[in-house]
Each structure stands twice: as structure tokens, then as C-alpha cells.
Length: 97
Length: 309
Image 1: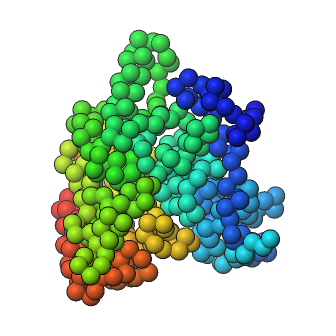
Image 2: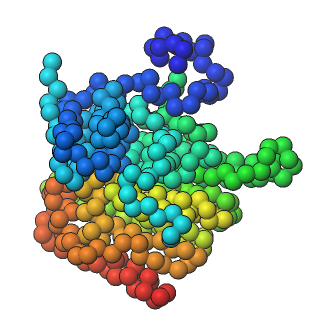
Image 3: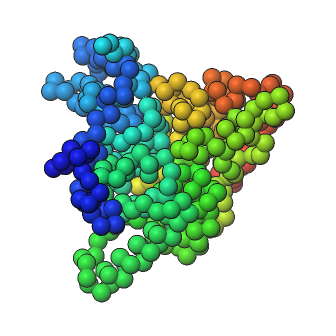
């Protein structure tokens, strides 16, 4: 998006409230909702991709060496990845100030 | 079957047509179901979506999570809108105004939009036999507006408009069986799926999109907020619902039933009910009643799917 979302006025919206830019919700960073963050123990990761498949926010990304980690910009900290990981290499750690 | 089957996460389609940045609650299995459905359908898709959780969270005005053409409709008419899209594009292709290619026409709605409010438009679209797919995300109440009961809410569930208390056991009516209503329209493809079984879900959606004529897919989507469960258990409860046969996974292809998944060991209903805040007031007697009903429904599906073999 050319402008930050809160700076857009109603006059600038398209007629009929049509959104012409695809997938622009990515500017909204849902990571700020989080109270716990997933931490991956990369040495234990078997690179199966189950966490990636079950993430409702599609925030799991593949790191350079092939293991998976959470993109904390979008991670809401639901804990599904930690629960579903078959080897249990993901732990949820409380976010601190 | 062999055409689509993928049984490894790493072989699943990588592109995301439903992007991050949507505002679903933490651990929303419905958003996960939408993500899987969009992975299965790909970019050549037009989506019409009824009002409901998924519409609200994915399209707050200047933003959209969708990477495909998407239109928001009122609660009742997503099936009617997609019928119009399908007919319009078919006519434009016939007249040579746009190049002919395969486009998936998909209407989506929650259980309120499907089983309660949009029932008439859906029934009409299925009856006319448009080449479309209707996907119902069933989270068993109007979760978006604050957990009001819908006709899809199961017996005994406590919601804000059917609260459990001294004089009430929560919802007093049985869950409307939407998949069976779709089967009764004699459409070529009906399936039930759950986002805890993603390979099965994606396969069914692909098959529904390839089927000429109307197809209906009913997806059980666990809602941690409304079912009052911890957010990390969203996938687990979907699995329990299927393993305890509360929500059997099956498809009906041209009237022929086929069970997609038979639990290795059928779990007791209490496994599924315990831990869910919306069922915590139920007594053993009521659970027994629900168990009988579940067994009866499951036996019926087993009988129907065996008869055909």
C-alpha cells in the first residue's frame, strides 16, 4: 500500500469500496496480538512441515537451512504449531516487556 | 483418487491465496480451512462470500486478505451471486469476449449463512445445477456476533442465546444435517471434511471443483472462542469430532456414499465433549442420549456406504 492504512481518508477509496490491490492485508501486523511466541529448537526439527500446514495465519516460513520457524510479524501465538509438532521441538515462551 | 492424493505436508501447494494479516482469533481453525481450500483451488477462482466470521476478518475496508477475485454479499445470497457470476462468464466466453478457460466458481458461507439464512438461495443454486462449489464452514453457532445459536448448533451446547442453567440444558434442538439436505438435491458431489484432516479436505475441494455441476462441501471448523477450548487444541478437537464419529467424513458421488475415513478405534463421545466449555454442564444421562443419537447417525452412514459396494 502506498499510504499507511490509518492515513487513508474516505475520499480516496474506490467507488463501490472496491479494493484493487490483492492481498494487501499483509500490511496489518497481527504479531502485536501475541502473548506467547513459538521458539524452534532447530537441531531437533525433522523438517516435516506439519507446523506450516496447520498454521491458521500462514506465518510459518522455511529458514535457509530447511527447518521451519515462525514469522513473528504475523504470529498470533495460538500454540497450534507447538501442540502439533510430531517431535515437540517447538515451545511457547511468554512474551516479556 | 490417485489423481490428487498428496500425503506429505511438504508436497502441498506452496502459494498462499489467503494471506497472513487477517484478523481471525488466535487458533481459528476456520481461517485454516479457508487457507486449505484456497490452496486446493488455486488462482483461477472467483469467490463469493456471505457475511460471517471469514468475511469480517479478511476484508476490513482498505485491506483484503484475498489474492483472487472476491465479492462480499449479504448473509442470504452468496449462492445466488455465484450463480450469476457463473452464468455471466459462461455467456462472455461463448461470445468470445474473454478467452475460454477453466474458472472455479466458489461460494462460501458459515453455518448461519448456509443452514439458516441462505438456505433458499443455496437450494435454488443446487437445483439449477450451476457449475459451482459451495463450501460451508460450520463452526456450530454465529460466532462472529458473539456465539448465538444457529440451526447447526448441536444438542446440549451452551451458547449466549441458549445458555445452560438450572432450567435449561443449552441448545434443545438437534443439529441440522446440511450435508444430507444437499444430498437430497441429487447433485453430483457432496462431501464432509474437517480442517484437522487437511489432505482429505484439499482432495475433496479439488474433486468438487473438477466435478461439472453443483458441488457442496461441508467443513467442520473448530472455533476455540465459541467452543471455549484452549487455542492450541483447535486441531485436536477436530480430530476428536471425527474419531468419535460425531462428524463422520464421507463423500457422496452421484448418489453413491463413500466413507473417507473410518476411525481405527471409535472413541467414546465423552472424549470429545470433555474439555469443551460449551458442554461442561451436561450430565451422564444427557451424554448417553447424545451418544445414542451419534451412534444411530453413524450407523446410517456406514450402512449407506456399504450398500453401494
